[in-house]
Length: 111
Length: 112
Image (cartoon, rainbow over all chains, first blue to last red; front, side):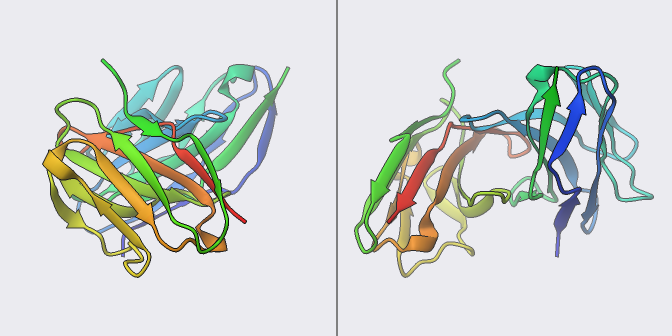
């Protein structure tokens, strides 16, 4: 069945370090892919998305490229800030109905 | 534009008691989702509504969980009776076209 696997955390980085959170997926057809972010005490917020192969989603300095050949959608940021500390979830939907989320990766950025 | 509203934000109950959560989606959003998020895990879909009809409830424990969306707007999720393993955050989300979900702040349930 459809599923998402993302790297386990927690991840701790110093401010201005580079970030990569790996995400791979299993799906039939051509799913849409998402990264959601959850700040402490809040609900999930959409960070970025890509709906077809080779699309690059970007927002707030974060980027992820839909790689069909490697079934991946890794999240990257060149220089993290303390305010980026949160839990990040990779997700997919094959049809726009059922959504599948990864287990989340906790990121802590220290000054 | 107002976001997805949920209440209560926190609830503590004893096992075998009942509890209800309320969700008001973004105005005009036809699709409404209820998720269960256990600590350290990703959200798991419990039920999805399209207007006031159920699209998917395959992972809803129907012996104790029920949900309704009267008039295709707000929705209520109920647990009766609650078990210890129901302790989780219950998230409501809504969607206009099915490809992007907007989440509420969640209800944190603790069953003792």
